[in-house]
Length: 80
Image (cartoon, rainbow, N blue to C red):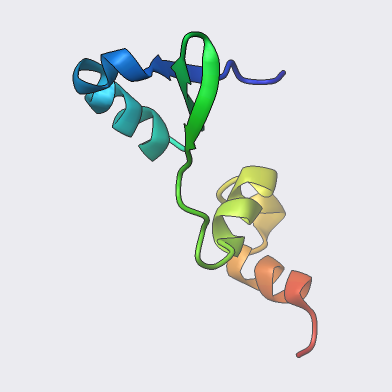
C-alpha cells in the first residue's frame, strides 16, 4: 500500500508549519503547492548510516529463534 502524499498550500504555510515539521519528522515527504501545482518538496534527512539492528528487529523481532540479533547482524555483514 502506498502512503498518501502530504501536501500544504504555500498560502497556508504560517499556519501549517507545525504540521509540516511533524510529518517530515515522521519520515514523510511533503509537497508544497501553489494553485494546486507542486512548487517545492520538504524531505526528511537521509539516514547517515544504515541501522542494521532496527532492520533485523523489523524482520525477525526482538529475539528470533534463540539467536541474538547482534550475532545475526554480524553474520549478515559477512567477513570484512
